[in-house]
Image (cartoon, rainbow, N blue to C red; front, side, top):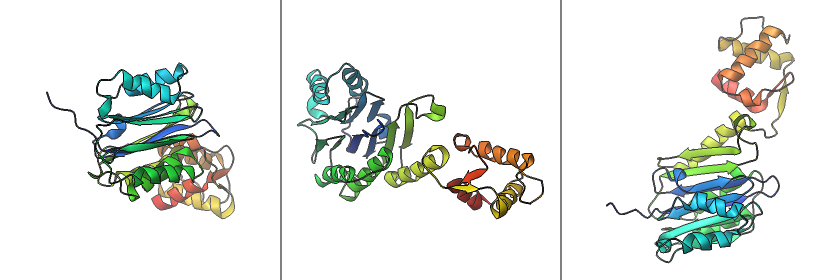
Amino acid sequence: MKKPVKTSTFSIAGFDPKNGDLGIAVQSKFLAAGAIVPHILSRVGAVATQALANPSYGPKGLELLAQGNSPQEVIEKLTGADKDSAHRQVGVIDARGRSATFTGEECLNWAGGIAGENFTAQGNILVSRETVEAMAETFQNSSGELADRLLAALKAGQKAGGDKRGKQAAALVVFRENGGYAGLTDKYIDLRVDDDPEPIEKLSDMLDLFYLYFSDREVKKIPLEGENLKEVKTILEKFGLFTGSIDDQFNPEFKEALLTFYYQENFEERVPEGREIPEDILDYMRKRA
């Protein structure tokens, strides 16, 4: 039987008390680490399992949190029932911002974690403790969306030394109540880079695309009138979507062409109600044209 490989990994789990977001960001010298490390349940908590990872820690840990156990109690119950716990590493945070982290004594150096209010950061087979310290400090001193703070922490951890064996995979998962596609699930962000020489940078690019296609963040709206309207008509004409007059009239033919563009380019989550266009989507159109 093939012996399991100890994965060199660093991760951070976080909670945003302002809106209830729960998330995990991870980087590892391990193929598709995002399929193993992060486990999240809205209004309950998040579990990051790594080192000689025990994937069952995820669903079991979330179940224990849902039953009212604290993160520290969850870790004690998970590791207490696991004969190989000395090889495990896990971080747990609940939907109250309480957190705890565990590093088994057989995890390869450097290995350890820091748990604080609204976050827990941990890593193994790292260059040094500075990776975890950088993640913790960056998260605590940052603001904005949880996803941005988690990614910033991951970047800081990499800059401080990161994984001793190198880079391969990264992932970012954030749950928000009714934040999923069309508001039908709680899985707000689920981005993975499974095999890339610069996984964190690739993940950062993917997050920018996520915001472009799906975000409800405040973005400047450009009125579709005058020269702005003529410009958008000209662009839609280049795309083969509009065949009418290039004037400053907001007519049904133009409205239909613009709506076709939104759906054709997967912007259906961001169709404005009025006669305006989000500035970032207009920039996208200009680049495409």
